[in-house]
Image 1 (tube, rainbow, N blue to C red):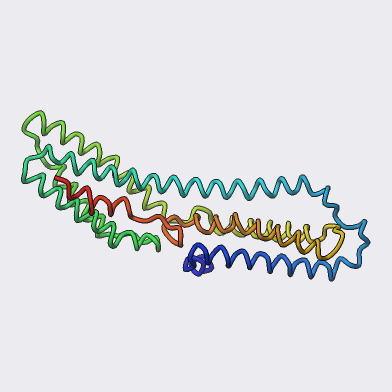
Image 2: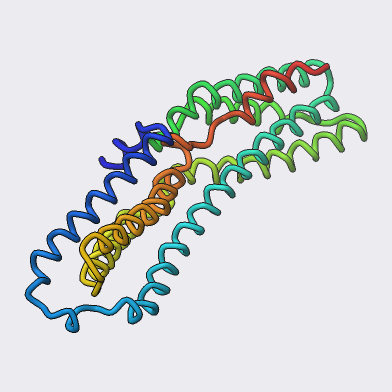
Length: 260
């Protein structure tokens, strides 16, 4: 539910919202900590120099998860480019077929790509399958698979299209399977708990004054909001302000499909 709410923000809006939220929460933690920790002597609080190992461990965990999600998001984007390129290769290889098969195949393939752009892509935000797109792809496949070549040129072209279709089905399956969030609920819970605990420890540091401590926590909170912003932006590849669009498929329809 929270993820759906945050997906409605623009990138700038999400950055500002998380930045202000993290800073406010950090300052609230610091205020509560000072209300409780004033009972302890300064020498009983954590020394900043003793936090180096914990700093490294926490930074490593956040960096590892963030980079993994960022790379996965980029890989999915590249995969969609390969999928569109595979469709174009199929489209051009249809020129090896007789005119009636070629024109029918191109028309059916065009209807499939149109279905992907106009209807399947919006459905991918919700993770629901587009059965009509599957039917249109099957219709194209059936018109090709039962064709019987009559000469060497048609045989070579037919084998190439069948090979490309096999590759395309794999690329399409990977795209459809990528509609789920890259990190699950349990990872979000663990990251949130570890961040809150680490923030609490920082609030119990032995600092010269409350003002300097507040500035320190403010900078930490602002920096912590950065990886969380990236995680929210990249976690769901097809939803949110940084969602992967259908531009490679639109380019096929708007430009390559019109080439002679």
